[in-house]
Length: 114
Image (cartoon, rainbow, N blue to C red; front, side, top):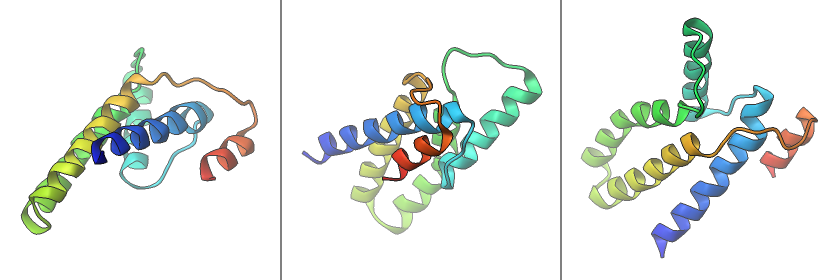
């Protein structure tokens, strides 16, 4: 049951990010925000045009050291659950297309914050 909750929660999170935040050129906080900034930098510098958002891959790579720390200090159960949730989020961040649903930037931010 916990894995189903993680999948559904990850889908809702990635749906909100890719349909409300990314199309408006906004960034989130934390590790995902760092991966979005790196993605934007790589796209601007190397002029890469891909059909999917590869910030999910960067998000996963940045989380690898955190996985190691979690495995060593917190425990195996927490590590495997976190690994599962981050893997699902990384896949969904890359696969859910980034499309603009609402033209108003402020409305998009308010929708995601609630």
